[in-house]
Length: 520
Image 1 (cartoon, rainbow, N blue to C red):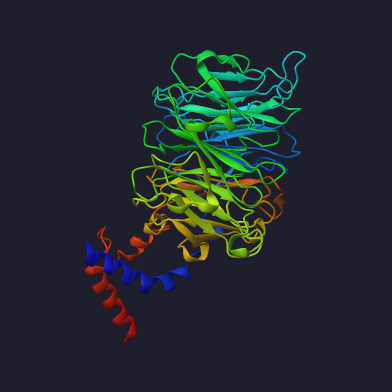
Image 2 (cartoon, rainbow, N blue to C red; image 1 turned 180 degrees about the vertical axis):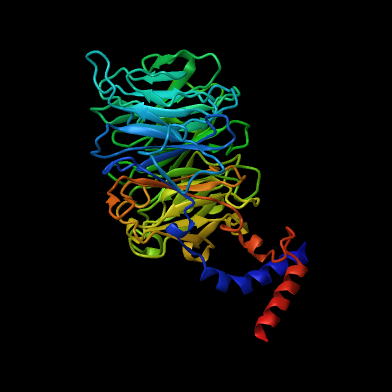
């Protein structure tokens, strides 16, 4: 074991200088599938969610949504995965065999298997949904996955099985964010988080945790969830609770899934993230500031701390799931707005209040290295891009750089402390035509069913080139970049020169042989 470790270290020293020069990938060269919005100015791709397999065909699916002054109202599309999808999918021309049209919905979300039937669900919402004389209460719809979903689902007449979650207060905007919560209450069914406004005039937010199950009513109201869920409310006005949400797995090792809630407050200075432990006896209503032993209050420095939060998986291989909090406004290394990614290790003894400026043994701070780099935006993890034992994650620097950073996990993430992003191995996906808000969002899902997660990239201002010249301006796009060890290898995989699954003296001999041939 010691000898193999020394061989790996030696090969890394030899290979890293050469490999770093090859780590910039052009998006147009590596995007395997591009899904374009149907009309000019649709700005589709501003929001996008991997859904898992919602139609039972064995392939992960995705949903995306429009966001512009198109000829159609707000609308979403469910695009089905497969092993033989075309390189270009035009949602204006695509037959309904390629997807499902979700008409008049203004938000989308991820749900997992909410009703326990072995097929994942999808989520859509209309935040401006009205009741009689009560306006903008919001409606979220959890649509049950099935092999026979209709080709069109209309808000005005939902013709698919599922459950409606409806607000009851003016401007409650239920469904503004929707994310899976994993099995938060330990009953064997995945749950879902839904953001809304508890009190719009006072800017008090709410996060509804709706419990999954087999026998659920077709409609619920935030006025009375009964045993079907709980509500977590803001600690203070303008804390923006729930603007980012993530299921993070089992962080504290109690067998229940935990959740992470971002709250990048306005004005800055009170930004927080909240780790909420899964529980079988959670109160029906809780102010997040009073969470106590039910979770961890996480603080940091710089504007927009917590604007993105994400699960990560067990990156340090200690048996506990880890998670990430974005700190894009942090002045890392004395550089204004250079940003940071805070990786926090799971453990049974996390403190109830955790300051990321003093993580000690609780995690890693990945620091930006340039003024206005704002590292940490569009943070997303819990992925396996290359089939090794470490989880992988993505983020991006400033929107003006047109880059995505893809970080393969590895042994370097097991040691707590501060590390420069430039000292890590990562791939850069560059889009010379990226421009404004590239990318809006990044997620992971195995769209082609090869066992590796793929990178899903949403860009609302992308334009579709048209036959014969011209383009469909700002129709928006979702790019699918297939994963795999050939494209995103870890350092250990790069050093396995003979592809036998191990890094040992045989690879060193092979490297020496190849080097001598090239030197002749």
